[in-house]
Amino acid sequence: MDCAIKNEILVINENKQEAKKLKEELKNNLGGCVASTGEKALEMIKHYPEFSDVFIPLDLKDMDYSDFIKFAKRHLPFANYILIAPPTLPDMDWLVFGKEIDGYINEPLSMPKISKYLNNFNNNGKSKPVGSDFFYRRTNPYFTGTIFSRV
Image (cartoon, rainbow, N blue to C red; front, top):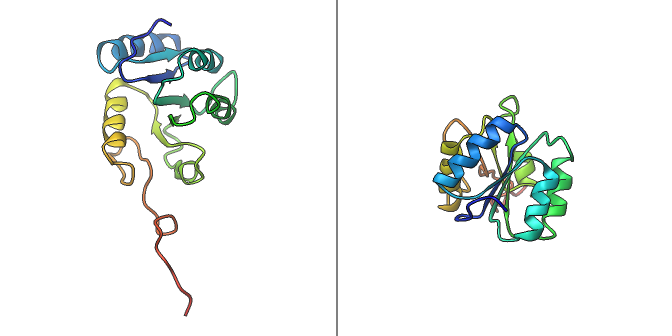
């Protein structure tokens, strides 16, 4: 595996130029791996089942993101699966509330966005919106345990 494992981050990026840049940035900053396809990412997960955060594009070319997550969870059941969504889809909370994903981040993906996301996600920021670039796990009365009664 050709990547620097410090923080157990796996990013799937199918754009070769972006992937190369992101790979260098990850190596120099947080550490982690960049896979060019969903299939390659699954192979990495099989051989190194220690990834804690997996960033998956919504529009994977070789498989559906939900199929990827199902297969990956066989080897990484406790990892955080973060969807990389196009900016035209700003609200993906329904996938978080449905427990299909653990969070999402909007494109374009960059090292500062990944760092900011992970810092907030891992520092108990799971329940509040962060910045204007991305959101995750916003509180909702239906899911917070609030009890409503009919009168």
